[in-house]
Length: 83
Image (cartoon, helix red, strand yellow):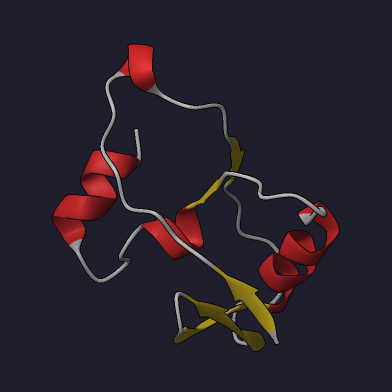
């Protein structure tokens, strides 16, 4: 099972570190795979798990993944993060 670590932070634009964004929905959304984020199991689409595997590297990499970073059950959070 894929294991990830997450950092929750708010930064102003001049301070923001470089990161890559993974934001999409494709493939079947009812087929899921488990990943572990900071010790907690999270069900994600099979396509997201596959994309994360392809994007991984031997060194730490900073990714912002909407399916992991946005609480889809929180309408205010969805509004803040989706233009």
